[in-house]
Each structure stands twice: as structure tokens, then as C-alpha cells.
Amino acid sequence: MERLFCLVVALATCAAHIDLSGKAFIFPKETDTDHIKLLTPKTEFTALTICMRFISDQTRTYSLFSLATPTNFNAMLIYKTRFDVLRIFALDHSVEFTSLPMPENTWHSLCVTWESGDGLAQLWIDGKPSVKKFLISGTPIRGHPITILGQEQDAHGGGFVASQSFVGMISDLHVWDNVLSPIEVQRYMKSKQFTPGDVFNWGSLDYATTGEVFVDDDPEDQPW
Figure 1 (tube, one colour):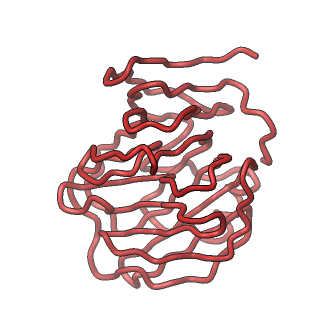
Figure 2: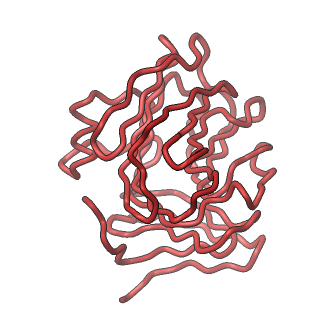
């Protein structure tokens, strides 16, 4: 298996802006340093849709997506708390989605939506939508964002804890600054033609790597 990888010693950084189609980030170990930082010039979000594929064998809590601003360390956070529970944060407020079909060591397709106008959040797992729940309304996310994969931010760009780190693989990440329609979400879930993310686009991703995070050329057993 041929692999393209970026391996950097702890605290070093490797920057890139490349097409990651057909590839996956590998987070191979529990750590309080290793992570991917996603880069965007956008500094205000009135809504967000975050979609990704992931696989992990961890039964403990871990972060899947962490966006922090100088004033809100959990400006947008997707956090797995138990084997069937995801907690979604926006502007340091949170809501839990329970009874989710997320067995370990299996690839899952996940989308999370939030709209500041009505405050509603929803998630989709492997094509199945959750109920909609109120999270927080009336205020957009503002400020210089630092977005991290692999760690949960307890500070703006830091405050990492090994026991909250992600161990596994993440692929096909797209983020939009609007709430996708159910039809568009299903297009993503089924890997049909969809409009790539306008905040983060897996086909042209601007990112930086810190620590031992790899890029796998040939993720195996993908469900899409």
C-alpha cells in the first residue's frame, strides 16, 4: 500500500494545501500534542454544517472537531461522550444527542448542523437524521478561529488533554457556513455530486500538521 504521509517530531509543523480525495488522516496514538490545524480566512459564522467520515476503536470520550475563538473555546465542538452519545457545543453552550448507532471500529459518516437564527442543531449518522434540538440562538460565532482535529481545545489553540484526544482515522471533511438541506446532506452521505465545503474543502484543504499524524493514501473498508 502506497502512502503519502507527513511525519513531524513533536512541536514541529508541516503546512500543506492539497487535494485529499481518497485519503484519510491517521491519528495513531493517545497524545496531548499531535493534531491537525485547519486554516480559513473566515472570521464570522451565522450557521455551520460540518460533515466527515471517521473510524475509531476508542470507548472513552474524544473530540471529533474543535473550533475555538479568543472568546469562546468551544465555539463549535463535536464531542463523543459515550458509545452512543454525541455532545454538540456552540458558543460554549451544549446539547446531547443520544441513542446513536455508532459501533466502534466501523467507518461512520457524520454531519452536524447549527443555525444561529433559530438556535437549532441536528446531526446525521450514516444517512439517518436525529431530532432537532435547541442549542443557542441570536449570536453568530465571531473572532479568529482555530480549528483542530485530533484534540479538544481548552484554550484558543491549546489546552490539550491526552484523554480527550482522537485515536483513529478521519476522512472527507467538508464544512459550510450555512445549513445544508436534507437532500444535500444525503448527497454527501451517499458520495453523490455535492457542492464542496466553502469553509473547509477536503478536495483543497489548507492545513498544518503537528506531531505524528499521517495521511493514508488508501483508507480501507470505507462505507461510501
